[in-house]
View 1 (tube, one colour):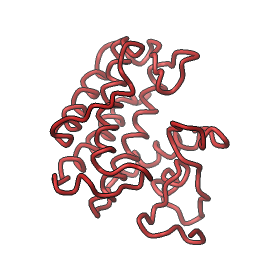
View 2: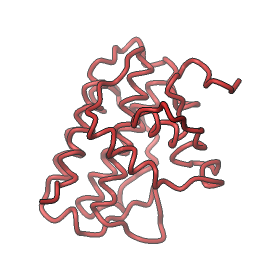
View 3: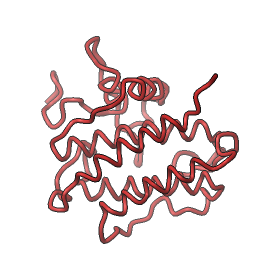
View 4: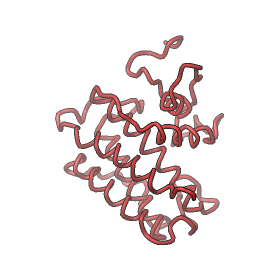
Length: 203
């Protein structure tokens, strides 16, 4: 019997939500592993993405404002609410099979719901790690979720697309034989597991 990917997705959002709930307001200006974003910027991005994927699940991805600039008065509470909204949206009947419009990823075609949920799953895991590192913590990720995240990250295109303006992820970093599944996921998606310390061998 195949496992519904939404079960793992809920776990990825639960992981993310738990870290966001531990953010203190005085840390919103702190740096994050996302090079040009402080914590306020990152939480805003996460909330916009969560609601965008929720809209896409409901068939409204084209109409959604994926590039909304206005920040919420309370970005922590806003991000937490958006986590709940996306899980609810993904639970609707038929979302796995219907085509989703995700103009933040591509305007050339629609994306199967199951594929879109995979995208959001790995994004949630990586952003959970981003937020955790920004507040000086590590994430406690379920091994199965880490393995799923790595399998998804392995399929994310690399090359020049990673240095284009607005790229979803930075250039991938070399992996090592000692990497855990989470470490490999992070490196594949342009993050150093040792952040904020320099990556060994890099300035």
